[in-house]
Image (cartoon, rainbow, N blue to C red; front, side, top):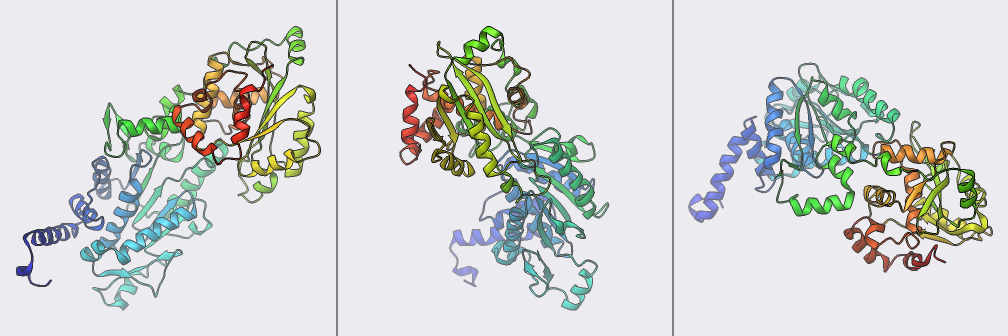
Length: 532
C-alpha cells in the first residue's frame, strides 16, 4: 500500500508509530534501544524490571565500561541484553568485533545464531539498519558471523575492518580453546557461565575464575570494550559475585521479589513463585530467585538436626547387630564415564547407605560406602562385597534407577548373586532441594532417623559434611543414598506421601507418572517394608 490516502485510520496510526520508532532507534540511547526492542519484538516493550540494567549499560558505555549484573532465573536477561542489546549495538557499531561467552559452546553458539538471525531476517532490524547485512563471503556460520555496511564501498569497508581478523560476533564456551587469539573491540558479554559442574568444588570454581581473568578478560581492549557479566549467582565466591564485590564493576541486582514487590508480577507473581519454591526447594529458591545466598546458607541443613546422635556403646553395638536393615544406593558415574569428560572433572561418588530399623518405628543411619573413580565392573564387585556384610538382615535394597543407575540396577537385579529383595526408584521431577531439605531434614528433625555417633566411619563423616554444607558442598552423593534408604523405609517410618515427596505438588506429579513407570508395583510394595 504505497499511498497514505488508501490507509484506514488504524493503519495510518501504526505506520506513523513505526516511523517514529525507527527514527528513535537510529539513536544510540536508552530511548533508542527501547524503540528498537519494540520494533524487533513485535510490539513488546523492554520489561520494567530490566530497565535499570538497560540504563546502567548506556551509563557504563560512556564511563566505567564494565558491569556485573545479576537477574533472577527466567528474568528474560538473555533476550533483552545478550541478544537484544548486542544486535542494537552491532547496528550502530558494525565495524566492531563482539564475543559472547557462556558456560558451554552449544548454548553460546545457539545465542550467537539468534543474534545472526535477527540481523539477517528480522524486519525491525532491517527497518532501522537497512545498510547492515550479512557478509557471507567472509563468513556466516557458527565459527563466526561477519556483517558489512552497504552504505560504504565494499573495498573501503574491508579496509576499515581489516585491523582484526575476528568476526563481528562469535559465541564460545568459557573453556573453549578457540578463545585464544580472539579480540573483542566492541562487546565482551558473559552470560551465565556457571553450572553445577564448575561450582561443585573449590578447585573447579578457582579454575573457572582463573580462566576468566587470565584467558578471557584480555580479549577486551582497555578503555574501549564494554564488558558485561550477567547471570544468576550460584555461590558467594563464583565469578559473578567476585566481580560484584571487587568495587571495579558497576552493579545491578534484580531479584524476583524484594520487600514484597514482584519484579515481573505477570510471569512470576506470588502464586507462581510459590509453585517454584515447592518444586525446587527453599534453598535453591533463595539462590535463584531471591539472589540471596546468605539466606540460602541460613536455610541450609543444620548440624543441629543430626543431634542427638545415636550412642555408640558396646550395648548399642550389640543391639544394632540384631536389627534388620534397609540399604539405599546411588550409583553415579563410573571411570568410563569420567574419561569422556574434561581432565579436571571432579567425578561423582558411588554411595551406599545402611539404616537399621528399630522396634519403635524409627531408624538409625549406621554405615555406608563412598567410592569414586571406579569402573562399572568394580562398582558391581564393591556393591556385592559391601551388602554381603549384612546378608540375612537385609529387608530391602532401593536403587536410584536413572540413566547409568538404571543400567546398574538391571545388572545387579539379574545377577546370580542376587539373594536380596531389590526395587528400582526414580525421583521423577522431585528436585534434590526438595528431597534433601524437606524429606531428610524432616526425618532427622522429627527423630525418626538418627545418625550413629561413630567419628571413625568414613561414610558417616562424609554424610555429615555434605549435609551441613548443602547446597555448597562439592558433592551430595551420600545425601542421595540416604534419601533412597529413607524412601525405601517409608512404611516402617510411617511417612505420609507428602513427607515422602517433600510437598503435595511432587505427590501429584509422581502419582501421574506412576501409571506408566516401571516403579509402579515397586513403590506400592513399600507400605509393609520393615514391618513385622
